[in-house]
Image 1 (cartoon, rainbow over the protein chains, first blue to last red):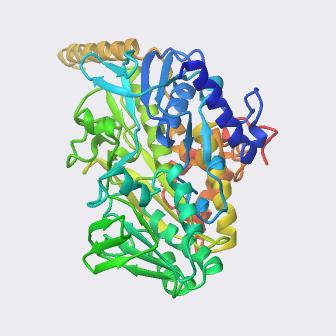
Image 2 (image 1 turned 180 degrees about the horizontal axis):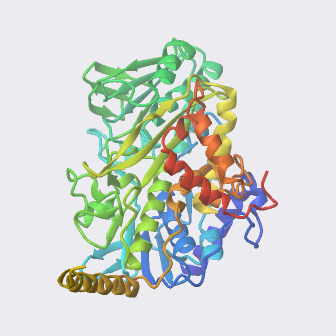
Length: 433
Length: 112
């Protein structure tokens, strides 16, 4: 595919998204509430961003908004549009389509002057400061920012593509999400939907519990007697324990069976059975979410220096502790913050601000603050929420939750469900519009 | 004053003057506005620079004292809604910086 095709496809993807949630933002003119790129900051430099997810798109946009026209920003992305993981569990109960979760990159180019390059990264030269792409081209940089998201381990028994095709994780929104929706539709009354949750850290801590709720809610209404069996590698519910304990024990009582502290030894995709520390289990649908690690580009370039799985970073700048000049934001970095889209957006702003200060010969902000926020649907019209504010602790050089500023909703409500949709639209606007 | 002390003081001043010259040479650029990075924690829900048109309350151009007062009042609301919980994450000084930054942004007619 050539670059012109990329732009055309990206713009088509953008139109899809506009029709659903950005109707008031459609059109060539930049809406007045969005920012414009200043011309006279006196700051200059070349920044390459790898990955156009929540972190990558946001950092590209804010580097231009805050750095000005002198800061050239090139965004390298292999796909024509981003598919949001946030709200993708609602594809499973038919409330959302995958298309409604897609966001193109044309706004970043037309409104903020971000240069888009569709391509695959082959190698990073941290000494010569350049990125090599699969088509042989090289992108020189003064600062490189990597936001690749996560990659997955292979669960024993699911080594072959055939086996993997029968047991989707659907933990990167896209074709697998639609596949899992179709598998759910194919279930019979009284059927079993088994899902596995990996040990933390993984992307979106409340996400698997939320999925169990959304699936149970749909099965209850559409496939009488069907069950959701949740096999959690963690010793207990790791996010929104009040909301999900209530959901499992009260709201979806008799539909969800929750088992903490379970080890998955292997999965047999032919017989659709799981070999676990609790014994063998047969299911009609298996949704196995494998253990996570940083995206391939981080591991392949020697940047996964935290246990060989995640990228160690200085949270004042998100600069790698393995290679100067390279910054890693979002799910791939090893920090004390959750791996989730909302906080990746804020890490991106901290990183953009720090890179601009460094390009200007200044020091990074010594006291950054980030926030995490998310809503979790419990049924088709109620949701709970979770939020936390993190502040830099100079003693441990980590981001620590501010005491008293982290917690979950007192209970699920329809008001929370409505707020969830507003939050999603504004978060996506801040990242992609 | 002891003339010896005076001479020392003027010598001490020299490196300081040189240092500030170096800083000026390095940063011929404008420093980032105070409070901008802190206030960017609001943008995910309240829009860029607090100029919301599709989401939660627009904050751009509101009076600094009003934003500060709201943030402080939210801290004691129980049971906390999400923003009440969130407001507990900022010190008085940080809340003032955020309020000052947002109050200086121009509101847009599209806000609701």
